[in-house]
Length: 140
Image (cartoon, rainbow, N blue to C red; front, side, top):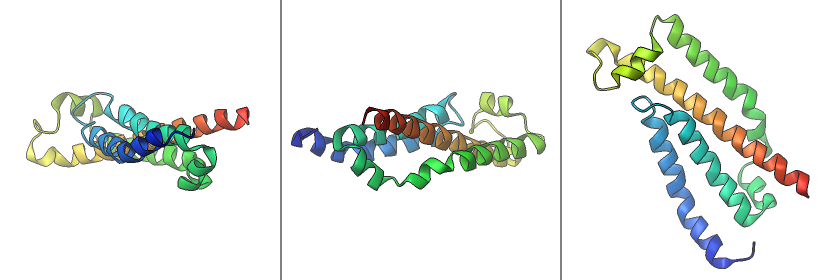
C-alpha cells in the first residue's frame, strides 16, 4: 500500500493499540476472557502494520525468532497454570471473587492468575501473527 495518510495514521495509532492490549491483559483477572482479547488486540496491531507496510518491513520489525516462541509460550502458560492449581488455588473462584474482594493472604493468587493471563495473551498474539504471515507468504 502506497498511501501516505494510511501509513502515518497507523504509525500514530499502533502504540495506543498495544497500550490498550496491555490494559486488557492486566485487567483480565477481573474480567472474563480478557487475556484472549488482549492477546488478539496486540496481535492485530502487527497484522495492521503488515497490511500497511508490507511483509518485508513487518518481518524486520518482528524477527522470525518470535514465531519459534510458540512452544515456549505454551509451556510457560501450562507451567503457570499447573503452579496455580498445585498450590491449591481454585482458579474459577478467583475469577468470581475478583481482585478486590480477596482477603489479605489471597493477593498472591491473583498475581499468579495474572501470570497465567500473560501466558495466554502471548500465545494468542504469536499464533495470530504467525498464521497471518503464513497466509501472506502463500500469496507471494
